[in-house]
Image (cartoon, rainbow, N blue to C red):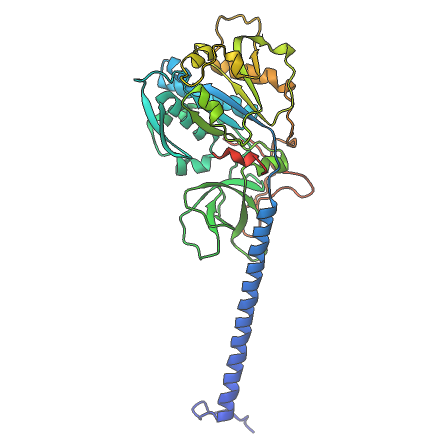
Length: 410
């Protein structure tokens, strides 16, 4: 006896049609319920991200700022030497973990000096050409390599930067380096409302952050642990000071241009100003007897070819006759020198090396131990996020081929 087969051409009864519709509605409800649960889960994750970002308030740490005159570039013979001189200053600042470099004009009274324009927080400004060029090279060297094409178009001031020694700063991470913090640039990619922004942090994939920002802005991102079956990397925007306050790692310097020696002090980015200032000169007291008091923000000022005396004389705002009156301490960091003159780039290295064991910061940052990061080959593949090694305060970063209010916790 053959099995009964339903005739496909036979019309379905009302009960069968109704049953099919109910089944479709049930499936539709299940799909909608699943979508709602996913949306609620994403909302909860976004809220957690925002709460986590709000809780990541950087601790106050003591800072080191150095001020150098831009006119030292004018004492060089060739454009290549100009660029190399700027590279020496950047290397010295990075080695001794300077947080800010101020490039000031020590010949501000010269009305016919060559000028150049630059962008500042207050808008477009104008300063001595050598000051602007020095600041550009310093900013270029501090910027991670994968971000330079976004912020530094081809220009003559940076023509010979390829000759310079790299800073090998800890925040100059390659795609293989495994660290929880990374510098990035906000991309101009379409993102749904309320979904934050997309940031390029130098990895094979972009990172979705928790806040919507204007494209083209440089930012610091803390990567979040990657969840299974989710392809997108997620992160939260943090203060540029957080990597150092949380792990002790040095996170680069900012650059500021001052049109005179007085502007070095009056345009200080910290709310309370520099509470300890040191001027360097061969006419100062010997550094051997210097006892450093506690400080929050330290400023060390270096003179040019004619010294700080010439910078004071050329400043129309300052009425002091002796540069000693401008600083808490006026030091000779190289007593009994054998050469008649000490070049500024030499004085920076020597002075910071002499002051380093004597410094007494009020808010000491953590000590970052380690020189290399452990790299896992699958750290940038789906399901893996570069993050700090479990069980340690921080991961180790290894060598790779300007808002200073970030240091205030208020």
